[in-house]
Image 1: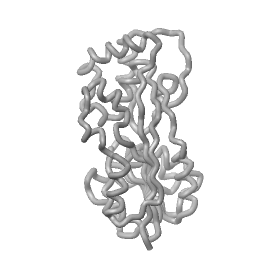
Image 2: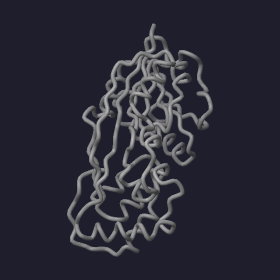
Image 3: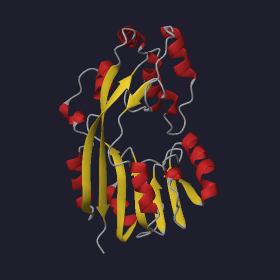
Image 4: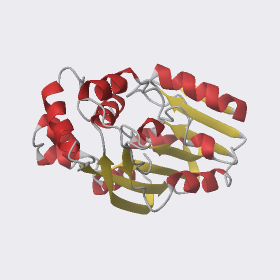
Length: 261
């Protein structure tokens, strides 16, 4: 999401929601929200960091690559480069985007072991994986190689989640806590090189942005549809019309773990 652009046009609830419902949510590109929502970015600039690391290795694996958008920003792709994705619409987008750069895109099944040999990759990366099987990830990293990723942190965008689902228990809020992530990596035999978490401000400026975001990030409000939550959406829309944005906060964790030689 990018910076807000002022608009003098006030559109109806029905028009905004209808537009958001009709818009594509394939891939992992959030440019549809340009001018409608904003989000602070982590200080470590993950795409740039990943690009520098990719230029230093001969083999890489990008897990849950989405539409390949982040990987494609790298100026240098290793001689052996593989990306995985499980959702068919994203798989097709990733293949179209990455094949010409020499990246092999492999379909995987959620929860299934990675279909790669032990010690196969110098660098394993991911941006916002749904979950991490640390044992399997450690298995495919070559000795001396690394896992470098940006994870969604605990309680991310929970102001929006709780606006629709009500207060969430502490056990749910703690999910994806960086201490737990680090413990999982260490239990799999990896050494933590760096671990940083930041809390970042998000602003939604119209109800269409809220609808589109929840359609795209489907685990925020499972089963979300604008029809099912129309009453709550109308309440938020009324608040947004006062020129006060809906404010939430995302959490992001940078984690780097190395496999001992």
